[in-house]
Image (cartoon, rainbow, N blue to C red; front, side, top):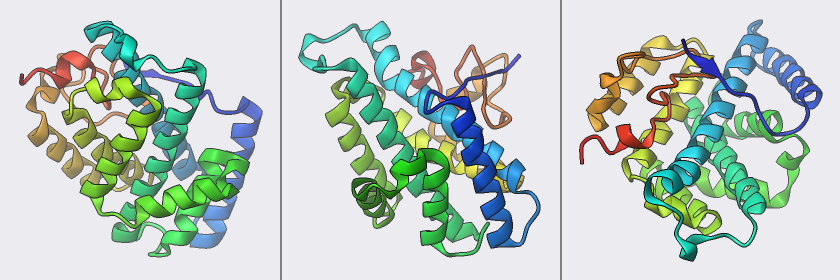
Length: 237
């Protein structure tokens, strides 16, 4: 019923090496034994969110609203790479802020974001620009961080400004849900989903998933849950 999507960052072998290293590091740092499960859920969940969000702000916008010649990027390949990288940086920051609040791996935000950056970005995690961008997000509260993210995304992908604004209210909560699920915090994940339903009640209208939480890395083909398709995002209009 529900489907998975693969990553496009690095080879499968490279991704698996990063996952194994991250799992070992998490186990050592937190004196735990569930590192592999946590890492798998985080990686699968964030890969799906990144891929789905890019589709919503790019392909869905063009399919529904048409391609605007004023918004054509010089290089679509470059625009996709920059956009997906920025999505990753934002996910790392939001997840790190949540860990600071929930203390899944203690309150050491610096260790957590560096660990997650290595998992998601590999060697690029040590790039000074990457470090600066994550730091800028971490210095902002949720609302200002979201606004900063949408502004940066629009520079790389101008058509994202035409996406329904409600999408960008749902995304930070989706990132937090992936984080909560990865660490086995089902009650928090369910509470976050209820917040999403309050923002967009149409989430529960899908006859396939009914807006329920799905396993990390899986999505509902009809509605797009956990990153909803255009017709669901505009259902209240």
